[in-house]
Length: 221
Image 1 (cartoon, rainbow, N blue to C red):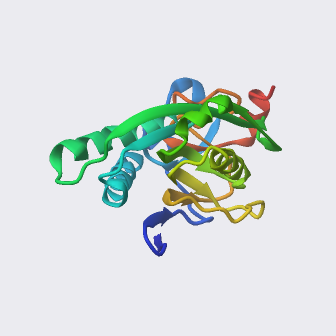
Image 2 (spheres, rainbow, N blue to C red; image 1 turned 90 degrees about the horizontal axis):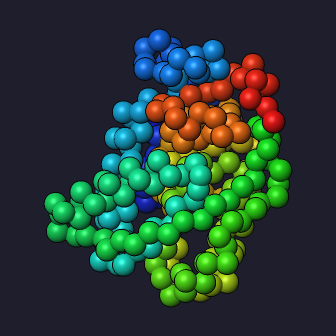
Image 3 (cartoon, rainbow, N blue to C red; image 1 turned 45 degrees about the horizontal axis):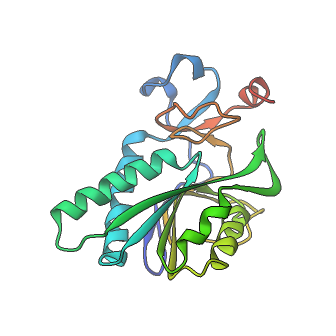
């Protein structure tokens, strides 16, 4: 089922979604015992990303955009999204001039948010003064991490800031923040794959999957 926002659409994956059995997909052998199920197959991620690219070009076409990748989890989504935007630039009447920049945020230890957001590379945000910025994030959970970044960015006086996140988690811990563009709204489960990690593991998994309880203990630091 799909929910509709005033401007853009997103997929809403319900809380009782059973997902897909692992043996229906290609999953690395070393992770087979660590996952409950596939919740978003890689092909669906790519199709949704292509549509997000179209929406961004529709809304921001004609502006010079600095695409700001939030590392580490956002790098795969960032690369795929920009590939689709580049394809649209080459094959449509409206195009988006793009440059790229990177920032790293850290707010997790094991599977728990620390409520302390560490910004790495924040001293370079001053280069975004007067620019049109598209922040590309993998997942918004409580929203506090993104609110911290947006607060830091506002001090640098960018001309415009839009946020695209592949995932937004439904959680009672949410601050209520919503990005401008959303790929999927997902249940309050710990998700890994497609560069989403658990203590740096599972970034090499193509699908987005639900991590099981045994794996949380297995990879705990």
